[in-house]
Length: 218
Image (cartoon, rainbow, N blue to C red; front, top):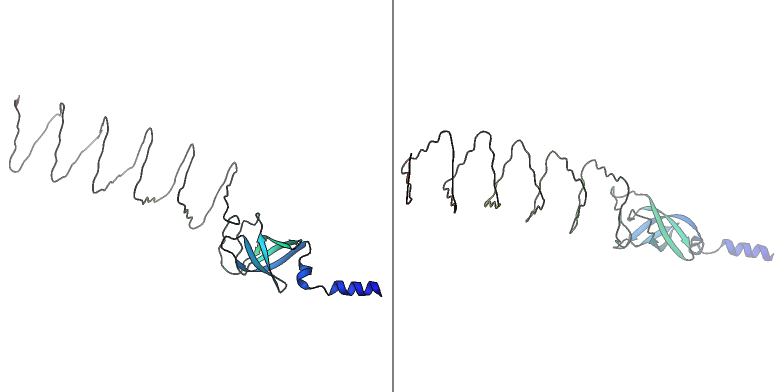
């Protein structure tokens, strides 16, 4: 009779106490805190708090079906099993901790769009290649520092309100035609200026003036 009473008492334990036995459960997420470290879950109609495990990289969202492990009065969300609400996910450590990905080869494939947002982005590589049909850079300041810079294009266009070029030596090689169209051109040379051509034609609509201490035409 004593054994039967003991068995009866075991079967009528509160549901909340039996759920805290050391085993796995499936639960429904009710709420998630701002940092994604703790959640409130529903296990078989019982609401309780749970901690998001470090290995649960997919951040839980409300209405998610998750796998929970309970032991010694503590519950941990191990992974997200099913998401019936939003069709997107956030991969992050609980508490917004730092994360790094290492491997011999890491590939990221996106079918539509990939967005990178950060206060600072550092790229370090021995070889860096970008292949794109169209590329756009928008910013307030663009700085490029290199031992040698090479640009090659079939058609190159530059547009600016003010353009300044500074160099110790400048060499321009144009195989065919060099055309300059401007309202006013001023050239100041502190040393010697030489120009050699097979033929040269100067055409002015009004005045042609040459000033100098000595002008020689031969």
